[in-house]
Length: 378
Ligand SMILES: NC(=O)C1=CN([C@@H]2O[C@H](COP(=O)(O)OP(=O)(O)OC[C@H]3O[C@@H](n4cnc5c(N)ncnc54)[C@H](OP(=O)(O)O)[C@@H]3O)[C@@H](O)[C@H]2O)C=CC1
Ligand SMILES: O=C1OC[C@@H](O)[C@H](O)[C@H]1O
Image (cartoon, rainbow, N blue to C red; front, side, top):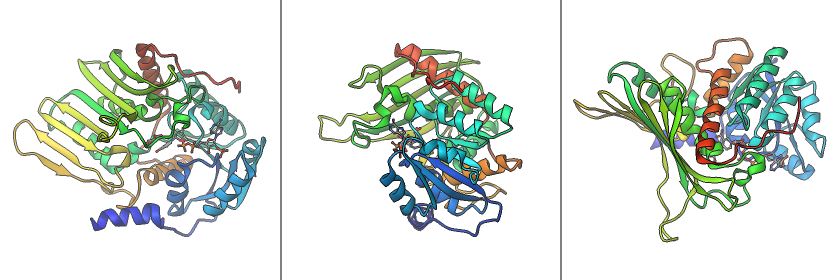
C-alpha cells in the first residue's frame, strides 16, 4: 500500500524532478491535450535529457493557462500556432496528442520541418498513412515512434518473458480487454467523432489488438468474428468484440468499450482490463496493463502445480525506479532512440504499420467504414 502511494505521489502528484543536461532534447507539444501531462510533461521532469520548451493550442487563453499550469516557457496559438511551434528552431522533438484523424497531417508537417516525433496511439487512421509517415522520417533521417506506453513497462515485459520462456509450451490463445463502464467519457469527446478518427477500436481497442499481436509474435490472417455496439453515429463503434485468427491455429479475442451501459441504468459494470495468454501447460495473465504502473498482478496458473503471482515495477538490470510510469519507461526508450543508443524496448515501423492493418481488418469485418484518410498531402 505504501509503495502504491509512493508511485502515485512521485509520478502524478508531485512528479520527481532532476537537473537537466545542457543539450537536453527540447520538446514541443501540439495541442493542450488532457493526456500530455501524464504521458509526457510529468515523466519529462525526471529525465535529464528532456525539457518541455513550448506548447501550441488553438485558443490563446487555453494555451497560456496550460503553459502556466505546467511551467512551459513558450506558447503558440491561433490558426498558425501549431505550424509556428513546428517551425521553432529551438525545438527538436514534437509530441502529438491530437485527435487520431490529425496525427498524419501534423506528424508529416513536423517531420518535414526536421523534427523527431513522439506520436500518440493509434499512429494514424490507416496502414497506408502510417507507412507514409515512416517513409518521410527515413528520408529525413528522423525518429518517429508510436506511443504504445504499456509495451515499455516491466510488467508487460515480464509477461512476455514468461510466455516466451518455454515453461508452459506454445501459446494456444490470447484474450485482451480494455473496456470501461459508461460515465468516464463525455458524449462530445473526440473518441466519438468519426471525422476525427474516433471509435472504440481506434481508442481503447488498439491496446488489445497491439498486445495480442505482440505476444503471439505474428500477424492475424483473418478476423473470424466481429461484433460491435453502435453509438448514436452509426459509423462509430462504442464497443467491439472480435476474434482473430493467427498462424499455427492460434486465436485471439479482443474487446474494447468506451462505455459499457450500467445494469438497469443504475448499477455500474466492472471494468475489464487485462491480457490473458493460454499456453499448452497453463495460463499467464497481466491485469491493468495500460495502468500497470499504478498497480498490476501477473498471475501464473500452471495446469500442474500451484498458482503464483508476481509484480514487476523495475527492469532486471536496467534503468528505472519502481515509481516510473509506463510513460516514463517509454520516454527513456524514445530518447535513447533519438540519441542513437539502444533502447530497452522499441515500437518499430513494421509494428505500427501492421497494427493499423489489423485495425482495418476488424473494421472491415464489422461492416463499418474505415476511418477517413487525411486530406493533407505531404
Ligand atoms: N497514451 C495514452 O495513454 C493515451 C493516449 N491518448 C491519445 O492522445 C490523443 C489525444 O487524446 P486526449 O488527450 O484524450 O484528447 P483531448 O481532446 O484532451 O486533446 C486533443 C487535443 O487536440 C487538439 N485539437 C486540434 N484540433 C481538434 C479538433 N478539431 N477537435 C478536438 N481537438 C482538437 C486540441 O488542442 P487545442 O488545445 O489546440 O484546442 C486538444 O487539446 C488521442 O490520439 C488519443 O488516442 C489519449 C488518452 C490516453
Ligand atoms: O489511450 C488511452 O488509454 C486509456 C483510455 O482510457 C483512453 O480512452 C485511451 O485514449
